[in-house]
Image (cartoon, rainbow, N blue to C red; front, side):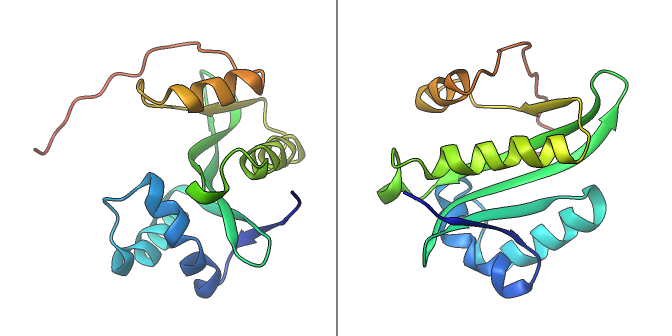
Length: 143
């Protein structure tokens, strides 16, 4: 396992990420993916990074932000490995790249949320030396 990690900046690079990202975010339709990524990028500094080995193997959506609670931090919105390529180290390689990216950006912390039923993801994050530190509460405003 080895791949090249690219920060998607061009429209075609962003579009290349869709098929893998759709495994994690199936509610996002192909025709809206590019528009949503670009809007999030403009409004919140969202970035897409992907690991490729001739084809996209893993994708991460993230942003750098700052707040009183955590100081400067990298927030990982999305991390997904193509289902046929899971447990081959691609997600781990991309995760490690994100940690180094956060350090290079002088972030103090690295954060993410993971749905309670995603036990395999939890094991992965705990193996990456992350801690479970809080509960995340949600109030649906549109049904």
